[in-house]
Length: 105
Length: 144
Image 1: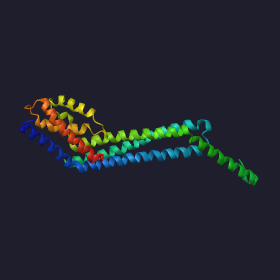
Image 2 (image 1 turned 90 degrees about the vertical axis):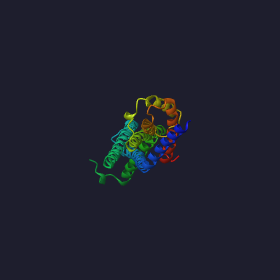
Image 3 (image 1 turned 60 degrees about the vertical axis):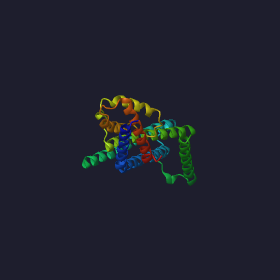
Image 4 (image 1 turned 135 degrees about the vertical axis):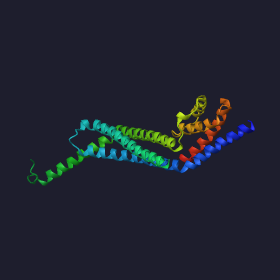
């Protein structure tokens, strides 16, 4: 590698490093928020699954023959709802992030 | 309509006990090994779905934060992109952040690759910068 090429290589690395350093706080902050939403989503589904089971146990209008099928259907619905909820929260988070970036700009 | 006051106490107790047993039987049915497995599978799928959404969001956030629009890549870095793409495919990806530093470094490179460098030389330098970026990204965001 020529001296000039090495110099340019170091320049590139310095720029990458300083860019990361500059944005580190932002990146960590939004990543933590995303992870929190992910964790809340898993908890939300767990709660829904428990509620579904309890409701089906109590709801004797659902015959024994239909119990398993209803349970599986309800779990799938809960999965869909949970995903929609997570998606919506993340969209809100990103919208806020865009707004902040626009303000900064 | 059932007139409960007309039913002897023992009969009421029996009805109550029967109802409880029925509920317990329904509960046990919903806790069968087959349905337990089904629940576990669904929990795993939910986790996977959520992680996918999270990864996309993180990737979008990185793009916004670091501001490296792919559209700004100069024509010469297209070949470069394929070189980097090959490097990436051999790495273990923890999360979906890969394209972001790639875009960022490509943009940085576009400032340097003014034509005086041939593409192989540029790719070599860029790969090094990209590796450093990946290490940093992983260290900062995944805690590795």
